[in-house]
Length: 354
Ligand SMILES: [Zn+2]
Ligand SMILES: [Zn+2]
Image 1: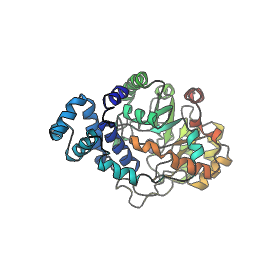
Image 2: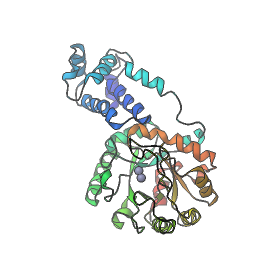
Image 3: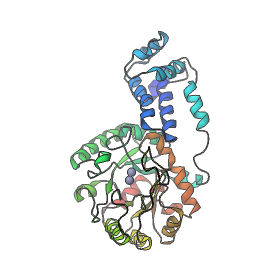
Image 4: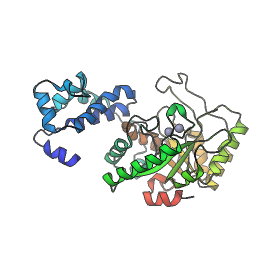
């Protein structure tokens, strides 16, 4: 569809859908609230259901706001775009977004072929799986692992086994549309207090990639937390240990105004188990997480661990955050051949099969 749209718009050189999606991408990349982004993604989706003549005529008649999903701000963007101008709103964002998100890490970033930790609107993300996949493809990725939350995380609308089964069907359809790009199936499964994982083991075994993370009782005593994490790391269904310390270095959308300290656990024991059981340690690129901290990242390198450098994106624009993780990884001496998402999708899946 993208090709035929751009052909139809050749005489204008601009496509309002592309401009609206680019605005949303840049807002998300700068960690704007999903509420602010919603209008632009909504308007882009609305235009996709119309023939170009329909919104061109509405723009010419000054009646864009009569279209469903188009408001004053988005109408101004569409109007300028249809007339062949760079929308002012977009020009301002491009200027603000010209700063790189991190320095260093470019070599490692260019070696990455995919992202193993991402969320869609099936749990607490802001966009449907197809939009996440489309953007990942535009960023040059060969694959994206969709890892929505597990049932116990009710605040994040975690998926029951039944919903996850349905999501697998949706992923199969997206894969037909975006081939050779691939959406791999996955989950970010909660590590429960006793170290078990919050989803049916048979279903976990069927998924391509399982990220296991602690999201509750982060302040439990170190001994208990170590036992809990070891059980998860040793579980044959676990492929990646997500954001291992749970720290927050800055507030996230108004929550945790003071940030959150690291969970306490025996890092030597946990990383030794990761090495032994071939569970990758995640380098989480989210600006408010930056997990693990550098001293633990260096310790995991020395322990011989594998790594996965992921965005934990909850919106398409956040898929661009990997450079933040690769910058830190490079600084801490993470070798590219020990980063599992520098591998092809086939090699990755061959490795994750329990
Ligand atoms: Zn998480
Ligand atoms: Zn996550």
